[in-house]
Amino acid sequence: MPALWLLVLVLVIGIAGFIIGRQRAMRTAQGDIRLLHSLPSYYGSNVFLSTVIPGLLLLAVWLIAQPLVIQGRVAAMIPEQGLSDYGSLSLVMSDVRRVADGLDLAVERGALTPEAAGSIRTELTDVRARLGAVGVALGSNVQPYVLSAAQSYRAMSATGSLLMSVVVIAATIAGFAVSVLRTNKDFRARNAVEKVVLALLLAAASIAILTTVGIVLSLIFNTIEFFKLYPASDFFFGTTWSPSFGGGSELGIVPLFWGTFYISLIALAVAVPIGLFAAIYLSEYAGPKVRSVAKPLLEVLAGIPTIVYGLFALLTVGPLLVSVFGQGGMLGVGWMRGGTAVATAGLVMGVMLIPFVSSLSDDIINAVPQAMRDGSLGLGATRSETVKQVVMPAALPGIVGAILLAASRAIGETMIVVLGAGAAARLSLNPFEAMTTVTAKIVSQLTGDADFASPEALVAFALGMTLFVITLGLNIVALVIVRKYREQYD
Image 1 (cartoon, rainbow, N blue to C red):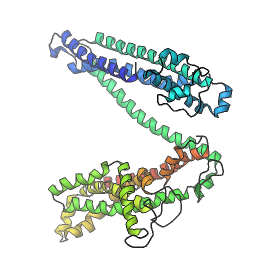
Image 2: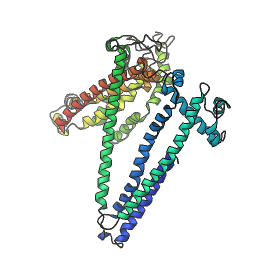
Image 3: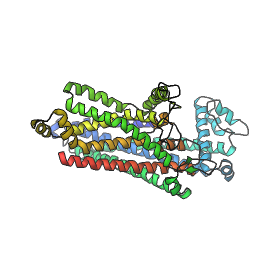
Image 4: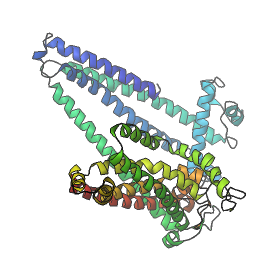
């Protein structure tokens, strides 16, 4: 049974358990709710949780463990000759899985019978052509040991799926039966449910923390592997970015860091004044009706996907800048040769960051005590003088924190840079030239067919680790400033 249908079945049994548990509790109390220890919904919830949790836990563990077990057993079937032909076990296993999926698809579409898929031989049939007929393209002819491993892979997967269905359904039914039998008017259902909910909350928090730790450890270990293959001094101080899969790469981060810094600087030059002035207007000058309409409209910008901003940069802003600063453009200066440039990405990214600055700054300015404004106005200052000399200095620590958070967002942006800034790693002050950033190069380094043990692939982790440290530092500074602000005015 497919995992999705198994999930649906477990939930259906759980819902049925909720209804039955609730009814059983009421029946043991002879319909008098006052005789129950807990509310009827707690009895139903206890049966639902006792039914669903064992089944879902087993399903999740099985879905994770089964591919690992099958992978290990099938990999042992690959002969040494096969590894020398393909170069590595991962490539062979990738081919095995592709052939196995192709056989499944051929059976599903009626091109092969289940028996034929399990007994087909390369000596008698052109397997590549048969699978190609159902839309599974293979790069080369299927070797006999690959086909044999793929058939074993299919057989083990089918057996594993059958066992998984049996075990999950059995655990679900067992949980259902035990919890229903325990249900009576004296059972402390509320206490049991609250313990389960507490455990679920603790598990959710633990998963979030462990995921963060896992990501950081992955970055650290792969970064260490990279620096075993490539000198750290050349990486941090090199001024040339020229990866070469044939060897002799130059992987200096300086041009990438400069592109990241330059684009972020232009983005902040756009976002900070516009966002800050918008926040001052909304908090100090706009009436309630204008504010109730203008602020949500401004924050709509934050909900637009970054790929849409990237397309906007590629199709609208880039050509517009070329028509002004390009060869034969409005100004006739010929500074811009193409639509992809630092200015294109910076301007669009600045628009994206406006709601980050304006929304946070608006909240911070509104948090300034009204008594400070009243005191200033009472001394004869105008509204603009009050904003400039009282409100803004009071809100400055929080506004600086908002700007730093926007800066860390700009440094980590990828899609706008990929579509709007180009892919050239260079050191230049001309904002109308194409450049690239750290995040864009991480994407390009991991989307090729390079071996993950090569410096060209491992450098992506070193770039990610460097970016992580920089953004972490900015966030820590921002949080320290915001905390100091809150301690002063809360």
